[in-house]
Length: 251
Image (tube, rainbow, N blue to C red):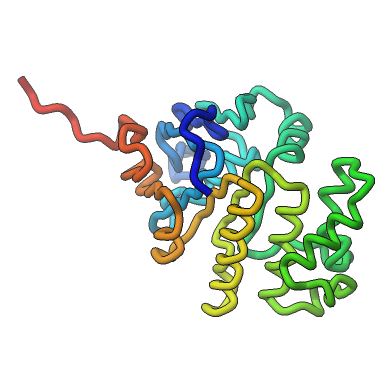
């Protein structure tokens, strides 16, 4: 789906940093993971976040979804300041706006496929949770597997359940962290095709972390992270952090 150039940003990131304390011989030091990031993402965009291992990609995704807290800076989702909210408030905002697909599936092992997909709908108080979950499982090709538990599903089937769970509430934003990382090439390609199909069908903004250049090339925009800084942004070069820009030449 092409973004609406007139719409307000669905995601706004300003001066975002993340540091964690680390033990040293002399005591404790601060390790910087992300440095002064800033960018905007419009509704309906498909954005790939790429970079080498350890560059900060997954940390960034966790901060965008409110699963972690930044050291400084802000994230706004649909105009609402994520970190002005307490933990319960962030969870409520995620429930209204966000779906998440993890590399490791993160299904509830004691729930069958249908119950896993119903879970976010029930938490939202949806009376139609079962019918919506059943229709979404059918949409991802698992109508015949709805009563199976995760341990009885293949990796590809588990990820399809995870995709169905993420899309069932029809979120405005879907975050996907290496969604094909634990899958073989053929199965992974099926999952990616499904993500893009659902993006087009529901108009969901898709932000995914990937190491795969072919997946990144399918997105309308690529943000490259290097050493915790925005090295390049194909959608908005001006959004690179000031820390990543070369210094101006001396007069």
